[in-house]
Amino acid sequence: MSLRKLEESDGVGGSVRLAGSPEEPVERSPGRCLSLLPWDRFSAWLHCVCVVGFDLELGQAVEVVYPQHAKLTDKEKTNICYLSFPDSNSGCLGDTQFCFRFRQSSSRKLSWHCLLDQFERDLPIYLKKDPAYYYGYVYFRQVQDRTLKRGYFQKSLVLVSKLPYIHFFHIVLGHIAPEYFEKNEPFLEAACSDIDRWPSPVPGKTLHLPIMGIVIKVRIPTCHDKPGTTEVLQTAHQPVTQISIALPTVYEVDLFRCFLPVFFHIQMLWELVLLGEPLVVMAPSPSESSETVLALVSCISPLKYYSDFRPYFTIHDSEFKEYTTRTQAPPSVILGVTNPFFAKTLQHWPHIIRIGDMKLSGEIPKQVKVKKLKNLKTLDSKPGVYTSYKPYLNRDEEIIKQLQKGVQQKRPAEAQSIILRRYFLELTQSFIIPLERYVASLMPLQKSISPWKSPPQLKPFSQEEFMKTLEKAGPQLTSRLKGDWIGLYRHFLKSPNFDGWFRTRRKEMTQKLEALHLEALCNEDLLFWSQKHTEVETVDLVLKLKDKLADGENLPVKPATMEKLQMHIDSIILALPEDLQGILIKTGKT
Image (cartoon, rainbow, N blue to C red; front, side):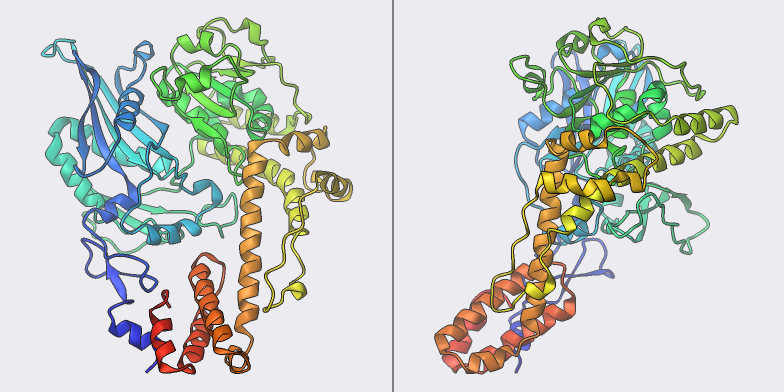
């Protein structure tokens, strides 16, 4: 009897079924995941849904948390309370949508975190969850109501999630929030029950997500997608009675509209974001501040922005003192603010973007020079970019002309955003390709990998060696832009974005070396080796192979390699005396 059959007879292995969907099994590694519980599907998309209201005595207060078992610390609740309402000066009458981001106070593991980790591996780096932060997606309503003491109805429906799917949750909220304000909690419970029937957020698949009478069709990108392309959603037959909405993106914001107020400075802003410089966006409302901050973060895609960013930040935020202190240099963070108080509090910050009301007409502002910081006295100061920063690269006049021509020809905003996104993508790729090429050269040759030795180490990153490669293989090969590229690289190599990017690349390359080492090991005749060595050495080999099998789940290895390794372990154990077989079968998980 093979070891695998022995283990399966003990009840380890097989598949589990998701709550609410007996027909859809989910494969899992033996012994790795628990059976799914009610609300596990909901937890794959959202941590919880909150309703925040205004109490005359308490101020903003969390009225409802759904599902009721969802855990939030007092600090998290306080942050949600204050970040869910616009500042009083914003004057947001009617309905307003925006998003915020806040620190998670304590770590929590989902009951099926191992399955979600598997989906996470297939995501592009810039869509991976940050374990330390939550997003809050807000639908705020403020309308006159004379039956209330304050004279106004003020309430926010907030979706709290780890997923940075800004556009998707904006659409979901836009559908459920207005009806919730009319029908209250029973409607909210029904909406949450719908979400608990959604399929898992698997990258690369067309997902059909029913929510209160409509079906939203989405496709989450994968790390294998070509950057800058949008996959066509596959259509499946659906009943004619269902209203279906197909979303071309789950995470992108309206890039052109967001950058319109600072149109002539887009290239300088790209540099500031790339270098992780402290940046403040002062806007008239949370929706404009949050959209602008998210547009800034996305402009260096497919590079991930590794520093902190707050689409909407208030004086009540738990990190307010940390981020506004004058006793040290401003941190590497992008803040979106609306309170006039910040014009004074953040005067010492080196780069400030002041935007007015975003014109829906799509008019390009007249060309404005970069303004001096000393001229920024209040939040009412004229819109513009206030900084003493001098860009490393010469301004690209072609993209300015192309977009200006689009406005004159009344080109749709979506098309303008596509042009701008492609421009940023090509700029980022021209910058990052020489780094990718150099880092790839740090990988040891495959012939240096021996199954009987530890995997070889990566060569260290040398700034000077990298700089030497730029003369022949620099960004000039792919970009028409002139300027001080060398200076830009030197500055970037000191930034948090380089640190995060290189740590990620080093981890990926180390895992690749471990995977190649594992493949080399599997190609050896391990049973023959064990017969030539002592029992102690053989037991030691089995234990090491079991460790390799466990580690292999996190390595880029083919399933066939893992099966081969399992067969090696099985055959070596079955060749040992029975007493040792029993001990080794129970040791670890095979």
